[in-house]
Image 1 (cartoon, one colour):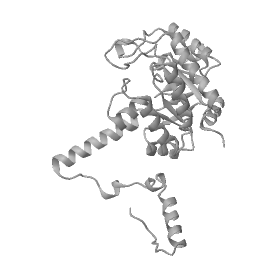
Image 2: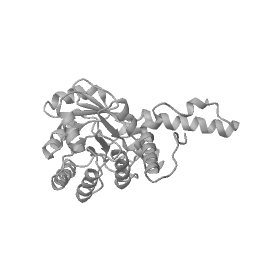
Image 3: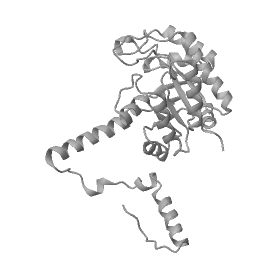
Image 4: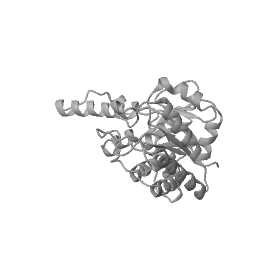
Length: 293
């Protein structure tokens, strides 16, 4: 069977635009797969907020991200793309963490050029082109040494200007220059958040390199990594229901809304029910036609 990286590369090489569905946990990854997405995407902000209740500004470590991505990847048949932030602070980090992502079953990641602490009030800027090329090269070397395919997406934050909390200056010319350098270093895909209006120009500038987007679909782009709506919706719903329970002592939710038809299929309940029933029958133990619901 093809590795996750090989499956992700084959999906991209088909040249047909696709959406990688949002996955910030094993269950939401299963949901993305269940509804039909051909790939899944685990965003850093979604994962740091949902699992650790911390912002995505560099405090959320690569070790924590790899641990969560492994939990998601192992329950999927579709490839998972992970947000790898800066891949640590050195080329040794980039090499080591790339190997761990591959061995965790992840199909690819995006590595960015913003300086830590990122997405914060610190005016940080972007790392040098040479340093970003070194990160990408370390990832390429790790992929070669592991001996498995793995898709390396280079994220350039030049179009994420400081006034919006990013590290770039907003220069399209500089974004293209950096993108060309990242491809030379071995990047398979380019990603330039967060300006959808400039994506067509970027696609035109890189006719032979896939360009990805996040959260929106643009003609000519290779794929869209979906993130944000799922975890925010889950958090808002939980906040509202907990607040109602605290303030009133009850929740105005109907019993039928406590479950949904796909619930047990998504957690493999029928498989484990049958496995246990088979064990009980083979060993002379009692079994029953139903389990707790």
